[in-house]
Length: 142
Length: 151
Image (tube, rainbow over all chains, first blue to last red; front, side):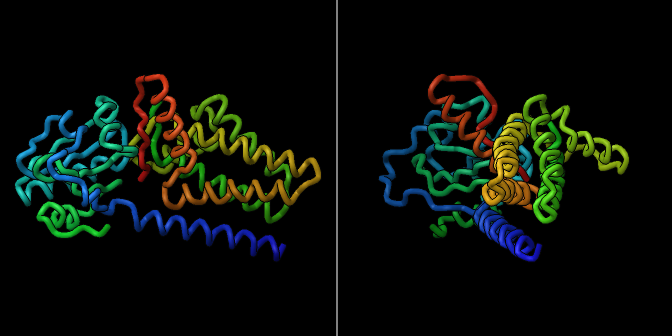
């Protein structure tokens, strides 16, 4: 019995570690391909027809996705604060675009710079301050 | 069928408790009971899941309110199938006289259900979404699952 309690505790510790790592990474913005040439643009974004002359935010959602409403709110607030465009993409309706943008989960937020350049992306509900920083051109943690 | 996102987490918490008890007390019938619960959810659908029905009953009794969000049944149901395969193999191994292997498999299910209960991270749903993506790449089926992130 004593040994089994220890084994079970070990399992709980491992699970807690995975949970903590997941919680830290979720919703955090990651910089995207900083070395990519700016003039090439991103095929998925051209497909969506979002503005290419100024920065903005793309939010990829799914119907019934649990955390999408919260992500939608954060994106709208950040876009309002900085007066940039936003575009919501329903991945179930626009699978081509979602695939071209390498979106694997909903919600995913893409920070798009001028010239359709992908600056950063976050999976899960984004952190408002990070979105504002990325849009304002501040460096994003890689 | 869309389900309340709280349902799978409640079921996972119950699964965690039941399998922990089965392991600690080495209760093979309790393990068999959990395998049966997995089988009902996976094969008959979550509508028939015993834990799901218990959750719905509690929801009415305790007035838990409307679902904060819903999700398609596919991911959680696939997770029940994964649970059935892993815990079922564990049960067979225990009955076949290799308890170390059997309870080891049970502990894998304990870990995954604990993870879902505490964080909402559903590994089975992730596998299901990945599989749907790969299948869609091969033969373009229309579908809605790109892979949801549970709360």
